[in-house]
Length: 69
Image (spheres, rainbow, N blue to C red):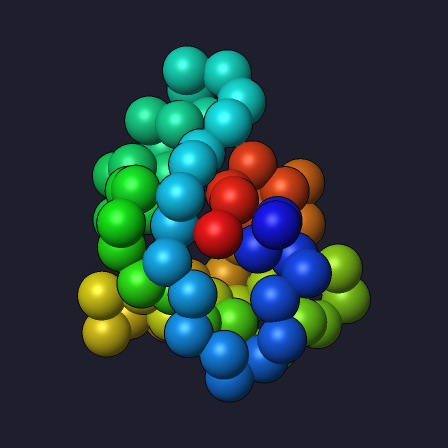
């Protein structure tokens, strides 16, 4: 399922990252790699706040739609 469908507070593991090379490289530089645990903190105005590697990251929903858990 897409990370955008995950419930806040629920820990999931990244299974796949799709999209163009630029998108995958950008997400990878933030720590979004296959096998990493992620937790959705909240969704505000179409953006999502996600915890990964003990860091909170705010991402546009278009980017989050590239992440499968």
